[in-house]
Image (tube, helix red, strand yellow):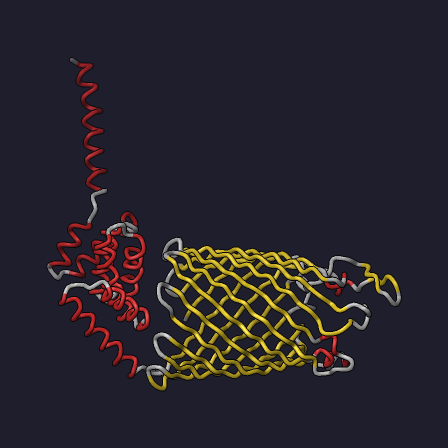
Length: 447
């Protein structure tokens, strides 16, 4: 009998522990739904917040929590939760309800385009009459708000640190054969140089809406690249752009002017001024098309070297793009061609060139926070005339590059990034052969 009691006591203890664990793991979703139905949204939101760590990612919980967050003024939290439901719920009815509430959340956060698109998706599925009436009312509100939109100013800062095994995109060979004087030894500055680096970018945008469909955009980008061991290839780049945009929900057009300046190791290196026009079309079933043309005058500073001006060119660049959003995948394909006409036809003709390239990118939205990506490109470059040192040879290059990386959207404003890239340039002139590997991690913060 004593042995029986010794067995019963641990069994009872284990049973009580199991019941306690089961009680702790009971989903709060039913209680949150009851509170939401009773209009007690703050209590539902508080309950959801307490259980967020354990139940975030469960579609039923996320929907109840997202609805409570929306009704209590926590619209950003609502967007995060409802986006998860709309993207991952296996229940079609729940996904449809999540889309409707998510459209409302987008409206509250003033993401009018996303709200309108999602309302129209729900509307296309022929919801009940009362839901249709509510959606039509929201669409009218979106129209009115767009007409009353005021100017906006946004800016962001991003910074990365990394390692680059060829910061100057130079050959690894120290000796080069030339047809005139035979073999020459390159200066170390003209050879492959590896270094660690930091790169910081400040971006500012000002948007002034004229009407719902027309606006003026002003953009400014400041970039500082600092190589840690040598200053010789440090770069400061400033670029400004003013554009007029117009169109409707399907077709958008943009016409702009831009100026740019590049400093190398603190000294003037390159200036540019140009005009550009582009067109974008929103197609059906996640298809997007685009085309652009740009004319740019590129000039090189001859303060330190009078022959730098021989590199001045006028560039015409044509680009066509195709994008497909398919579930969690976003595919983008761009084909481009450029002609650069040398300003000095006599001594600088070899700096004129044409290049054609194809670039592909793939983004996979693993979940609302994490997006791995891949980019690949090929480019063919043909120069216009014989090289003055390597005479009887017109330079021709083939360039290949591959980049893989990861975006981690930690919250609405803050993103962490990581990427690795490899570039290989093959030329018929040995001096211009090079390969380059680069690795970097960083962040982006939207103010």
